[in-house]
Image (cartoon, rainbow, N blue to C red; front, side, top):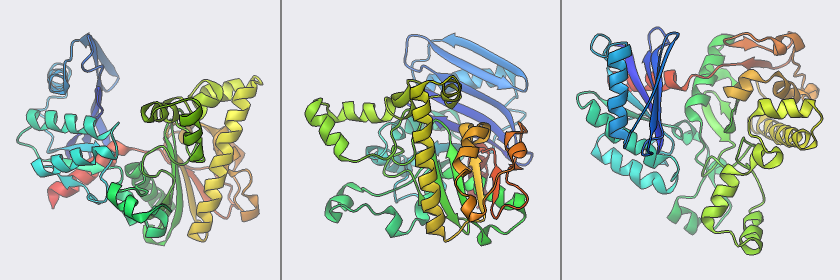
Length: 396
């Protein structure tokens, strides 16, 4: 069987997708949210049919019952199309988990212990895992970690220049995130250009509300912009990305901000929303076109940081063969792609304006025929990648 149920669980919601790996299609997908609130909501999509309802969902266990009811009522039947396994997205695997892992009670304990490194993500994933194991006790459950792909980072890339006794005590290092997406896209790009993955130097730009860039050499992550948490690196929808650490000290002293308030400030009130009041790049581009100064500055800051990382990672790789744009902004904003590449002509990198503006679906080339580097748009599919990795563990 090649059908996998993929779960992406948070503290008050979870997404799911029933994936047929062989055909690379989603047989159904859904979202259960506002768990624990007075009224929850559930959405189940099969083909063009989209079914929604509101009802109390006190916890994740109840949420899974709602999901199972939706499969039974709207299809596809999990009896007629049974999943062979359940794949779970887990954000933080620390240095312990460097491959997809069969979940048992000990793995649950480890995921729980790693919550100190991802307090916003791992607890919710663990709630989903426990509810799913109760709902599907006969199936193997596999954890696929966002951080696993980046376990190939060399020490020079993952080590922070702080007292190493303190760093080791608190496991402070760069872990990197979006690893499932970076792996999927880099492998899809290699297949598209019909060259062995092991021969390619690649940059993958995962640009969505969360954003990261990874330098990939021969299929291995060698540098990545996110760090101990998903806060480091590029400017994002609501996250600041890189900043002088002394900013935190200034805010703590002058604004009397607590650690919790600083966390909320940098993760939810910074980035594009902090600069321009909106987090969606489509809104930024519309306001920029109207001449709004804040949106113009926000866009310029976003592109400035993006170009800086692109240049740095080309230098780290010693050249680049393929650059891929992916995720919501990367796949859908010709303006971001054009501006990100605009200063790279000295390296012979050139976009084809018509290809870049085309609103085609699927993987495609947007660089000019005479460009020294192939530039692609590669739609990411993290659910398919999680399903693939899940089946690989089951098969082994």
